[in-house]
Length: 592
Image 1 (tube, rainbow, N blue to C red):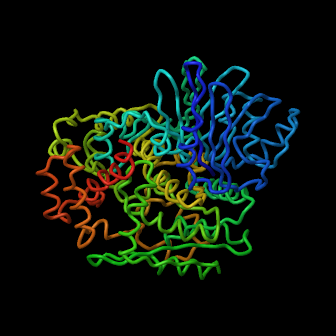
Image 2 (tube, rainbow, N blue to C red):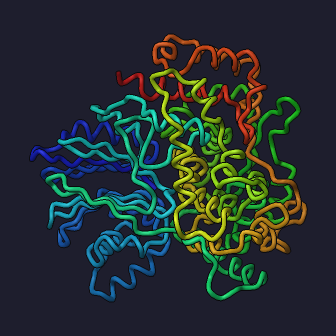
Image 3 (tube, rainbow, N blue to C red):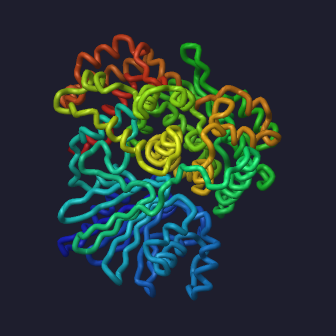
């Protein structure tokens, strides 16, 4: 797990290494163990390493294979690297390291761009092919690892974060009006390839991108999710048995691909508790970690009752942290600085604060993110299923943060656009390869929306502390299995039934049968006291008024009664507005 960046010039000049050094420096927190650079004519790489597999200096990056005439920068983990290594040795390749980075180099040499289809894991990498003068970029199937880029007629730059690209300079920082509409409709999600900044784009999940030295570009999608039923009908028990087998295999892959101890982020919910159950017999002393906050407006802000039960049941080495609201406010600016894009979900800050604590004990943790999207665990899925109307109407009435009319009430005329988010969602739902409406919804969530909410949140907030978070529920074999399941099986008993069934007998019944919880930070939902005054200061600041994104009448309405204005999934609309402005002031305004 690392931070990567690079530049490819199209004008025959050499990249400015001072720029690469600035970009790489902005990635230091993602990779505290080593810094490295590489240049070859029109190409330069920068890398920050978090050493997880093959801790030797020989596995530092950029990794160069002079014999194959290839160079690599890589962020992530290839979970099946040992199997691929053995296969490549049989093909005649010799290895000098024991890790997964060198496997990527050899695999690219052996199989070309199709090597990505052989990788099980989370990855974003770049390979410089000196033989052809080609730069090859790739991102994993579910977008677990980020890859941003900026492109003009003279050069391509890429990096793990927009902040690194901004540090390089020369980025068009105007707000993209289409992305702004998506951001405020899909609770902070801007689907790839857009970002809020017009000059920065992101490679979509399951895509590769090739650039020649003259600027010729080729983008390819190498994986899609099939959400249709199999030809042979399976019984409920057969589906559940298949889930057990594939999930166990996924967890084992995620555990074994590490030369350092692995812990678990234990929220007290079903997903993280199941991970603990599947790991407990294979780890001598399993570290688990939980966090909680102060209650606000009578809403509980921790799930210690359940995480304590799981930790005691499996005799883990449990770490429990209670965070006062004063610390939440204190750490918010730095948490926002680590967000690659503004993320309004409350638990972003929780992950940030938890990441700091966890990183003091381990370098790798497993987390339960993705299970709700893959197996239909959120409360709005059954509501969508029961809704009538067009697919777009059924989806939007339970998911969109704002209808289009309210959006136009919120933004100034300069950012008024047609209902572009509705058009995009409708087109996504209509794509072939899904049997039912809810198959379409879950496929959309798993392949496009989840990437830029829970998945990005986990990457950003753990990597800010040099901590690698792995998400076994997003193993692509498990995702493919779940996508083919009947919707009725996933939504049975309120949702996520296959995981509840698999957990029975492994996890305490009280955890399985409890109402679904969330990772709450209620001070960001019920905006009061210092939190309200902070948001008022941000939204009334000269920078915000000069920027001119929001109509003042809308801002004043929300400030007057913030708890009256929540989204359909119970997010604070005031926090959403304040967060974007705060993110811009911290990350973008200083470069002007």
